[in-house]
Length: 98
Image (cartoon, rainbow, N blue to C red; front, side, top):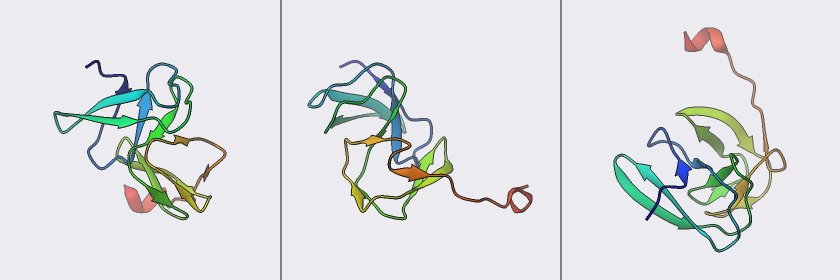
């Protein structure tokens, strides 16, 4: 099975698909050297994020091991598209992260 999504850190809860994915397609990515497979619950454009676990409102979206936003809708199921329609940026204190 071909890898068609990228996950860089094992703590990430999203992966980035590398081509257009249709609802029902298999999405495959590597996590800690192990190949993982999920089914796309909806169509996702190339280079966008797919949820690799169920998420609920307020959960942090983690990509590259970093918080990139917070979920703004009640829930997103594994295999769904994570986009500007369901996340928002969160304020960060960068000085504390140095």
